[in-house]
Length: 136
Image (cartoon, rainbow, N blue to C red; front, side):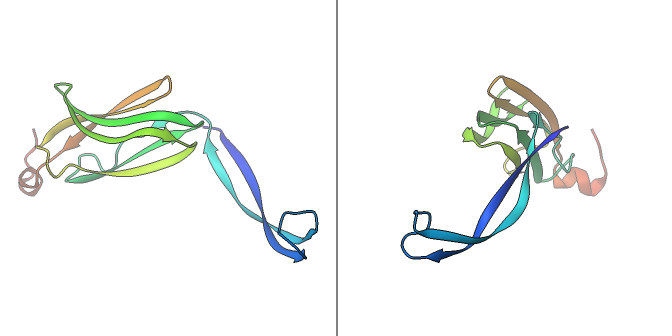
């Protein structure tokens, strides 16, 4: 995935009389701030860990400002959680999903951002299943 690098400069000190940024101010030095890496494409990564109990990390990338919807669905297509809905700036995002109130099973994480749609399967295992090493 290609990354777009944005460099920003920070004003170190301002000398002069009056308001900084006005004509009567003089910038004496600048310092480069760490570059910001922006994704070049939309992406929804696989949650980690998977299987999980009861929390998991969901990460996604947005190359442009986007109106997004990040939701969790059951296999019966019932919405069980809305993680975020609204506008997001370009960047890399991580969110922790807490499924402690859900039953064990397979769930779908879906990201809709502008015209982009992506889904990932997530498996929630109860403590009983993890402790007894039983799988289904």
